Amino acid sequence: MALVEIIMPKMGESVMEGTILKWLKSVGETVEQDEPLLEIATDKVDTEVPSTHSGVITELLAQEGDVVQVGQPIAILDDQGADGSNTGSSTTTNTLAATAAAIETEVAQAVSTVSTHNNGSERPADNRFYSPLVMSIAQAENISAAELANIAGSGNGQRVTKKDILAYLANRQQPQTTPASVAAPAQPANTQPIRPTPSPQVAPSVSLQGNIEIVEMDRMRKIIAQRMVESKQISPHVTTFVEADVTNIVLWRNKVKDAFKKREGENITFTPIFLEAIAKAIKDFPMINASVDGDRIIIRKDINIGMAVATADGNLIVPVLHGADQYSLLGLSKRVNDLAARGRVGKLKADELSGGTYTMSNIGGFGNEMGTPILVQPQVAIMAFGAIKKKPAVIETPTGDVIGIRHMMYLSHAYDHRIVDGALGGQFVRRVADYLEAFDINREI
Image (tube, rainbow, N blue to C red):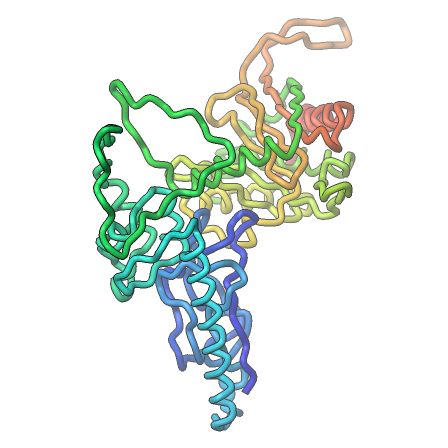
């Protein structure tokens, strides 16, 4: 018998854990390689995870509702059991049991470490399992052990899930401020409040007087906030602006969009045209397609362009179009539409959220003319495309200059000044604008 561990995959560059929503196979069932094995939810995406091997499932190391760290084993397969070649000897069975027991012990120790070393806090004495995610939320929200023990759980064995504790927080009655002269009530016996970890930089308290509404950040918004602050701390941002005449692109799209919709069954937008121009410019200026590792500059050979997509709940997600320079304009259009549609409803796969080397954001869709985008670490550049506006412009003709109405758009290029100087950053955005302005109005698609 050859035992194979199935581990929790990495579901995005900033995702370090996932919640098991549903096992699609049970112990004793056969699974083929690349066949869906379970469904996983993260703060960015819900997706099916395929099995990395073929075999018979001998052990599930995590249950539905559990939050599992990336790289942690979640199941054990017998990769010879599918063809019936194993005899199931007692020695092999003992090996499997020992392996499973060892993994279970490691998981239990890891959970125990997380829960018992957070500022000396104790676990609730109600004999329920609490995932590290639930414990961290409880700690951050100052939920005492006794209070946590009273939260009704909807998971297996009445386990408290992330959804349960967030629902509790939404309806939680905030305690009244205790005057300094009045002693605070004693904690229940054998319990100790879970206190938040002090931050090295404490923001000033915000007055809550007046007609206000308090909305708790969801976990994805907290992660976005953390990543944006980190990016500003890591990279000295510089932003350069260029105005481009995209009249040919507008006229061309107006000419082909109805026939394209009838033929392909979907819309053609400006985004694939922008992506094509960026990919061409990256080939001209490969230093833009880079990242920083200490004192080293890593120049990426693959051109993988991320595109910011607004989700239904108002957050942002950045699916990545791998090998963007290898697509035709038709291929880019179809790929963009597919990624954007699935990104809005959280149905992207893990590899579609990682590996980006450059990012673009089409802020013009919100009516914005220009902006100062924040880098997606560890990338060193990002470009925002503003709204297309009709403006009077000087047009050069063989018989002299004239004033005409043109479709104009601002490109905002933000870059990491550690390795991208103003010359490179400015030349790159100018080259993208040049490709857009030279778009062939008679192009076939």
